[in-house]
Image (cartoon, rainbow, N blue to C red):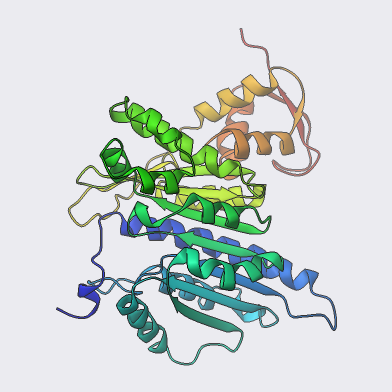
Length: 371
């Protein structure tokens, strides 16, 4: 058994979880690095970005698959835009509470060889809450754009208080991993109260004790999301479900401060679930994903939502994009060719003013009255 096997075994949900993580970080880096360069002032300090992994682990799974720390690092240096980001300093902070895991992660990073001069990874061994104030808070208070991945090995090691402090800063986006099946299972068990109080930041989770099955899960998830939404820097919360072959239910919960972050989160979720954008279900013992390339997305619900929102009143393409992004599970990419154009062809939508093509600014339309 190699050293990694003694540290962390791969779970069935891992491939999907990391695919969502990589897809989101790819988009986040592209937006934030470009923005940082645009806002940089001649003679001023170099812009910085922070990638934070709050429960980093050893960096690699028993089978050789990369863990989240290496995924974050490789997403950065392997990004198609990285060659243009020489004027941005990238800080990667990995916090790991177990010494053996932290040492193994350091060795994994060292094995990558010399990194670009503007990329600085740091592995800090210690508890997340203890490390937060001296090492994370200075970045947040300075307004450094931050992406944080919070993936504790057990829910008892996570805390809404420290997560809330992350989210109170307007330039911090957080992706949280929630082991819902285990939380569901231990609700009501004696001795779990302190851990659950810490996780939810409230005692209201106790209202789930009298609930069973999906009702309990729905209540707990809604409570967790509502607690995140209380933070000053959070405008949107979105969840993605990971169902493993053994029936366990995990959730990836995005806490986002602006519509661009929401757009990136949806793009990442649809990359893993190209049919519905909300759920991954393992189909084999290895947890491999099923390919959905030949299955069409049903945009009927999106069309119904748009009609309910606007009725027969005129609306712009920008208004339709916002409804799609904020009020539905669909991506903006589903709107024009897959929803509005077919509606026009069917005689259900009248274009009052075109901007040249679908999606150009200034396009105005309305739904034709039913019947």
